[in-house]
Each structure stands twice: as structure tokens, then as C-alpha cells.
Length: 638
Image (cartoon, rainbow, N blue to C red; front, side, top):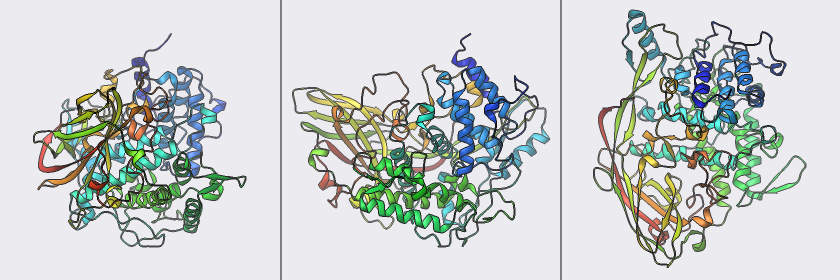
């Protein structure tokens, strides 16, 4: 019997319900434990699983490779049921998720949102306690219980101004999902599939996170972040107010003034040594592999090699020498309160891809990581006219149409999160948390283009945004501007001879997904698509596509560029029916990344002219728009 996507979806969902507690019924179809599962269960239950910790990752990789290798869907389900109650809870959810995303027979099956599997990673402990209190008082009522999200700080901490962004549920869920689609431990030789330009995508997705965060800081009248740079400097404090449902312990708060400490697995000196070795390789122009051979960091593969090395992933050229600076940096910063484990504390939020974006140090750490990549980009020649031009094509006008032309309104909006699939309340009505998040009005771009040639030209349309002014009110020069350019969209258009008007809606952005389907929606078969895949649900949250802006109307550059699709195109991308909803940050399944240019082009390299207006060619247009924030809150009906 061949199961359809809906039947498979309904059989997969229970794997993720009540994930933090042992199952009541033993699901396993076979009484014995499959020999393929030997050696698993090293990371104890009740420990916090970290995607950045080498030993945790090694065990998770062993499990997801076994699950992906299962011959049939039935065998896959049986293995999942067998491991559920003896491997670590977080490791189980991660490995089963990776397997579902990559098994050919799970095409069309969606993962339930991580925020409904482990709400304790997204919802403050005070809020969860409020929800339980409401439930205890109304245990049998049929109507839904809804409680409001509690805040995590106040204005005594300037960084609290950014809490709405850092602690946004969608952005943290995106980070978790991206690392499922691009596991650091992916082994093409075992799985049989190569993840094209995975190292470069690691660089670009995190670079864009930093750029978007700085746009948000400037929107709030705050200075751009200070990169982390000194491994012995005191760190700023942070308190997440999260507590783990797996072991009942809080994610510890970090007071101001703590410094990084050696762990038994890695020392601060190791991080400094790896930084220096990577820096040397960048400036020499090559890395040394394990055999001592030189591998050039050229302008085609250099960034991809460097991305794998810095993360570090299993594709790193020489991990024994260059280390794993990014991953161990996350682990060491998460353990500053209890480096040797004497107090049996949980690690901090920096240890988990679903929680690390909440901590201001995440962005400072990633700006430090990005500075390494920028050092490499500085070694490459800047783009010349022939790299940038599109002969015969001229953009004459760009309009952004919303309620007011060339202005986007942003506002706060309420949404709800269902807790009923993580905690067994045993009541007909759901228990939900109401939370607010940033959103923006819908808008569309209207791009007027003249084709001065006699032939139809296929084009790639590239759209970026960046603030016009820095925190002091000075106009940003190209050196600073290019690092704040956030990608808004990238798509294909046919440019016919003469006058053309291209219209593109914000909802169609190549960067975003609209929203993840909830447990309830998936159980009812909503959005089931036999051709969908993991890349459909990996994307930047649509509600954060546009930076907040300010109440006065914050000026932004809207930069549009057309390039020659025939030069950009890779293989036959776009001819197949595969889902490519958010290719900019997530790539396309089992295909080459659908753009031959470097990610972030044309802003990925040094621009020698100081002012953007002097650099713009006829196939580009820089238009000034404003983003205006309104404090009123809208309701969003899920």
C-alpha cells in the first residue's frame, strides 16, 4: 500500500507530541531494540542538547543517518518509536526532523512548528506558569484558555528596546529550521546528496541576520552593535526568563561582567589560536588541507571553503588545524556561569539554535564571525563595469506602492501559540499564549524598465534595502552601507524591447515564508502538497521582512538592480516544479543554488566610490523610501 502525503503527515505528527515527557504507551512495533541503534543514548535524558557541541552533534548525526537510511516509511516510523524513550529529548526531535526533511518518501510532509513542540524555548517561564494556573482553575472547560506573554526586562537595560526582535518567535524558529536544512554534520558521501554552496550560505544567512539586526537598532535610535573582538573582555548581561521543560531548570541568567572561561572540551586559547590561523589563511590566500597541500581561496570557491571552516562543518578542509571557532564560541559563551559543571546548571540560551538569537551576544559574536568573511572579501578585486552592467537595459523609475507611495507602515500585531501539543492538559479547549510581534502592511514594487535593444532579455531582478543615516544622523557611505543592505527579493523577469513595467508583491519575496502551519492545521491536512519539501518551510518570517522604522518615517535606500539572467542562471533551475519559496537564504532542494553570482551581489565586495549615487549604473536604481512605525496593535487571526 502506498501512503499519500496526508496519511504520512498524520502518522508523523504523534512523533513530536509531548516531546519533553516519556510516552505512556510504548509505540514500538518490534519488542527488541534494532541493532542499528546501538551506541545511542550517550547524551542523557534531561540534558540540554546543543547543535553546537561536537559530541552532541556526533550522536545526533548517527541517529539521523540511521533514520534516513531506513528502507521503508514503516521501518523509519518503527525506529523513531524505538528511540523515543531512551535517547535525549532534544536530540530525538532534531534527528527525526532532519530525517523527515531529507527522506524521499517524506516529500510533502511538513514538520510541526518547533515553537509548538518545545514552547519552553520560546515562551517565558512566568507565562507558562500563568497558563498552568489558568488551566488548574478551569480544567474541564471547553473554551480556549489564553494568557498573555510576560516581558523579560525593562528600560533600565537599553538592549530591552530590541527584545521584541531578538525574542521574536518566528525569527528563532527560522534559525532552528535553517540549521535542520543545513546540518553542520551533513555527509554527502553517506546520504548521497550534496548541499550546494552550504558554506557560503552559512556566511550569507548569518551576515543578513546581522544586517537586519543593525537596521532594527538604528530604527530604535540605538547605535549599531559593537563586534565581539576580545576573548577576555567582560560580557554584557542577559536574562532570558526561559526554563526547560525537559529538566525543570532555568536557562541561567548572565550578570554583567562575566568573561569566557575554559571548558574541559575547549579553551579560550583554542578559540584565539583558530582565529589567528583562519586570519593567516585569508591573508596568504590559501588554506592547508590535512596533507599539507595548498587549497586556494579564489573568488569562486573561497567563500564556500571558508564558511565550512569557520562554522565548522564536516566539510571543513582541515578541522584538526583550523578548529571549529563558531560552534565552540556558542558553547563556551553559554557556559560562562558553570564552565566545569560543578553547579549542574543548564547552559545558557547561546547553546541552542532555537534560543540563541535572544541573547545580544549572539549578534556581537556573529558580527565578529562576519568580519572574518569580510576580511576575505576585501582580498578580492572590486566589481568593475563589465561585472555590474546590463547593456541596453535601463531602469527609469521605481515606485513602492502601499497606503502611501514610497512609504511602508509597520505596526505591532497579536498572534497566539498553542501549548496543547507539548503539555497534556486533558481538556477539550486549547491552552494558548498571546504574544505581540512586528508586522508591516502589504506593498508592491512597480519597476519601469526600458529595453533599448531589439531582443527580449531575460533578467534577474535584485532588490535590497538599507538605512540612509547612521546613529549620529550622518549619511552612510558605501563602505558601511553595503554591510547594512538587506536582501528583500530576487526573481526572474522577461524584458521586452521598448517600455516594460514589472510589478512584484511583497508576499512573493524570495526571502520569506508567510507562516508555519500549526499542529492543528497539519492534522486537518491544510497545505498538504506532494511536491513540497523542507525548503518550503525554511525562510525568513514574512512579518519581519521590513525593519521597524521610526514614528517620524525613517529614510531607507530602496536599491533595485537588473542583471542578465543568462549569465546568472545555473543549470535548468526554475524549469522543475520543486518548491523554491525562500531560495535567497535557503537554496533549492537537490539543486544548485539558483544564482551563479556570489550571495549578496553586488554588495558582497568593497565599493571603491564613497557615495552610492556615483556608483549606480543605468541597470540600477536607488530610490529613497520611508518606513513609518505605528504603535497601535492589530489582531491577527490564525
